[in-house]
Length: 115
Image (cartoon, rainbow, N blue to C red; front, side, top):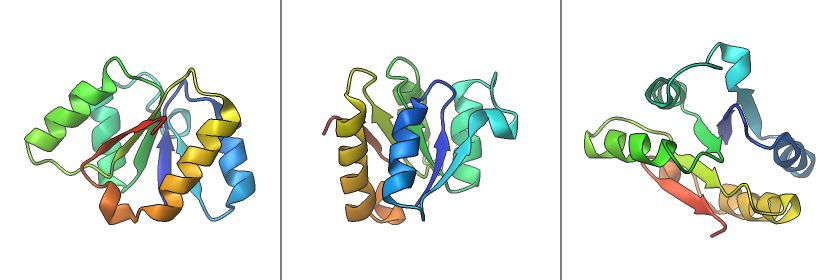
């Protein structure tokens, strides 16, 4: 599975995911010139590249993601992780989702963690 990592996402979680599964691919928003991009542009970029967005942003991302879904626009998915979760628990729950869901099952959904 491939992910776009939001600007303020906890990189300790990404590091832990990588240690557990080296086949996972992560692209950081900052590395593709989207650091200051508005959420709709980030979601569009992720959809165009088939990347699930990893974010802590519960304030604005869900609204824009659901708007894409309602309009029938493609979306590879959003994994919205509470920034209050312990890093270890976030890694465990994300690994379960990653290994139990296919990329097709993630399309058009916003999945909240903790589950």
